[in-house]
Image 1: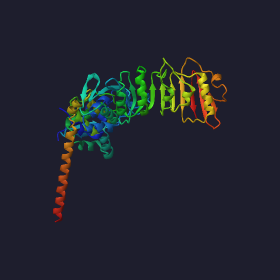
Image 2: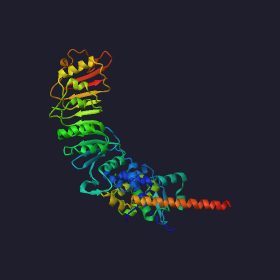
Image 3: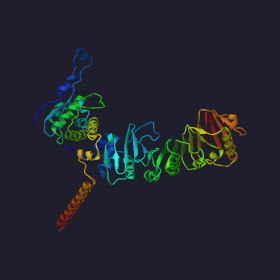
Image 4: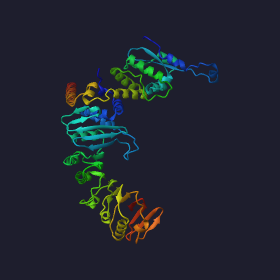
Length: 299
Length: 188
């Protein structure tokens, strides 16, 4: 005999919803507007140390050939796919909501978990280029955009320029700047964080690229800036009145140890604790750390 | 009122079995209280077992009953079925003075019973048992589709919810109109 769950006292109902796993709570939210609001009101929170935004569920969305795969970490991993008006849970179970589009699925998922954006938006190699525009409309915003290293050059390029404006942080997995692409176009974008992550083809940067830097933080897993270019950049920075607000540039590659005498050749600096401190005439300061890689902070 | 005393057997293991230990620590006699549900069957429960229920614990503290007074005036829970109250009493006796385990497999499997148990436990404010029951209720829909969940938990569709809301509004409007008419009649 069925039971009328909605006649339970609200507190008990919230206990029941919080006892469900994420996928079951999504199914429950799809029963009616009332159940959707109940799941939303349960305001599911988690304490998961691995992620920077502690206390909330972590939502990944992978854009594939003809579907979007959601992965929700609580910290257990729960995944499901959405395409057209369908949702596909694990074990190959489908459910259709005829009036829903992919955009409605995304809004529904974000809404019930009280999230304004997905945490990770991953573009996979089988995502069609024409679909990138739709992705922009459907997601509107994301914390981190990750363009997988095996994506084609055209897909990486198109995705970067179309989706970087909706992302707080961009992670590019393949070096697309070897020939025709000018890396300074990427560096001048107004982003919070840009991560270059191609170990096979390290990103080659020049002093000019660094001068065009408009991103708050650039992290390069495998950047390739010569000591000569770094010296040129530091000299240009010392002489100019170019202002970098809260900018940080980090590159790490373990093959070569940077040589202090070549990087600071002809530049006045102080050593404060383990940092090299450079002071400009206008009072602006730059702090650098050198090792197998370098870190520069504009103070 | 028919009266069957229960819960005494579960209190028995607490009694001392060896003389030297009891001599070292004088035994404080355990006090008992009495509760009955809709069926008026009285259940005898130790104060230790009743600690689980914030409601009954509060009543005991506030009333300051002696055992005789408690026996003469069992706590009435007319809104709880006898068999459900029996389950609650059994659970309280089983978990008397023990840390509650993370899982409890002794809960009823029948959906209606579980639902009534949730309502009773919520009323009696037994937090740990409520958590187990709610987990059990949540397990009913594990891996089910929205359509199956709607069926198991009798969830109305949006159209049914809207119709019910309209109906409720209509009824409230009629009642308000009736009250106004009655008030006008009184004034005349």
